[in-house]
Image 1: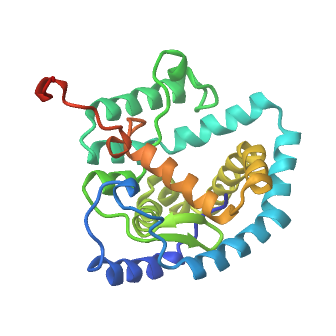
Image 2 (image 1 turned 60 degrees about the vertical axis):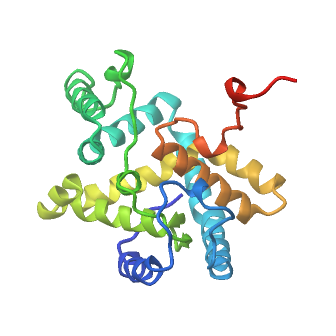
Length: 256
């Protein structure tokens, strides 16, 4: 895991235009058979460069982060980062027409910012309002925008054309980042990005290490996990109807 750079936005926008005519509409990746990876040779090259950066820099930093900060402190950092993301979660819930979800975001933000001391303590979750991550990629999927080809982006990792464009929209429209950058608080944006990278990567150290050791094709395994997770987020955890077994129609079946 690592921070996403705005330098990729122009390239992904051009790629979206080039692939838009050849893509068929879909809601989730599971609706398309196969890995949907026409750029696999290029993706594999970028993937292994990213892996080298992770092994040399990001994973060791995440290990230090996990060793130095006790679990309660890591939880507090994660809670603050989620609280700072509330404007984006609220915008995406609203754009998706999920009014209950939007109300939950507002209630969580109010409780955690005040009673939870700026978000350090997730008071809302204790009151039965758990955190729900919402991204602009999910919003675009709800609107019916096709995901486009699978991509591996430099320093970012697994993605897709829709996911990359969605990230670009969030980066440009994030009110917390805009406030920091417009008030000579760029250090706050960098700190937020760095903590997000470290906290996320620290949470996946054991999982990714196990995947590296036991995967016959580590690249394909990461690609599959990315798409499964992304589809689950888009469906808000609901089962994938395309993966459901066929149920016989007993009412119309004839008996011998």
